[in-house]
Length: 225
Ligand SMILES: N[C@@H](CCC(=O)N[C@@H](CS)C(=O)NCC(=O)O)C(=O)O
Image (cartoon, rainbow, N blue to C red; front, side):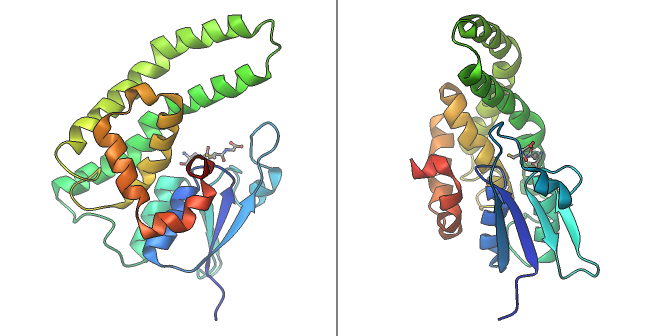
């Protein structure tokens, strides 16, 4: 058997699950190299040898001559869906394609940043001395109320309103935008469950039933709980 040409550099418990899931959907053989997070939760320095940002996901395509790395989950999704035949991208010029592109970008560009702030607040509170944690907690609550939560609430309400009209994020067919949204939504369920509506929860259940997701579910500690 020939060795896989795509190597996925996967940081544990990270967005990189999207790419493992996509590669399973595409039925493309791949090698996965798993990196442990540092105690600070940051990526280990070895990832800097794969790409100058040192973040995950990042893939290396060894079929290219010379091989090259592709970073940033949305860019990797575009690269892989262009390279391998699939039905995970709607046809050009359709409403579904517009929805697809919107969620591919909004997931990382609009929804993930305030959610990442919530993750940071949470981790920080676990590590500050107990006697100052109530004060820090109050500051974080204020920032959440004014800055992070209104955006999270609005994006999730928009997704919920779209899912009333179609089964998946872009339309009635499953697409790579569902994969891109999955990890962000799964964080929303952990950190802001009050904003995740019933249609969105149904959609999460639906996409978790896919055979390709089940093959990578071991990479998501939340699913293992
Ligand atoms: N927008 C980027 C985000 C990449 C990113 O921040 N990845 C996180 C894992 S979810 C990471 O590598 N964190 C470790 C670090 O920043 O050191 C993407 O979607 O690929």
